[in-house]
Length: 105
Image (cartoon, rainbow, N blue to C red):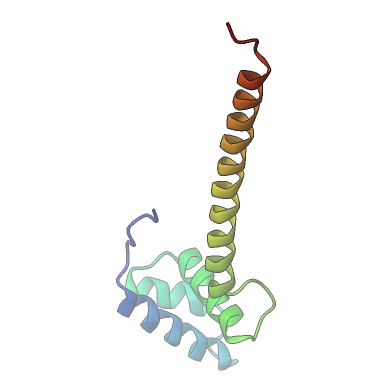
């Protein structure tokens, strides 16, 4: 289960929008994340991560999109469950095979 978010989604979206717009303007590009983070009460590194992920999601930057990350997590969870189920079946079959090999009285 994911941890609760510290910042509301509306604030996050607004901060990303402001940062992307500020970074497009060469005059405001330097220190834009620090300035916007300070205005909105967000750590600049947190804002940097949000902007980077937004750029990846938009296709402007290489990397795993949010949808890809969610799908990967689902697949990894499914693989863990299947491996666990296979181990249970493997142990059950070994137990049953051992029961069949025992001499009966």
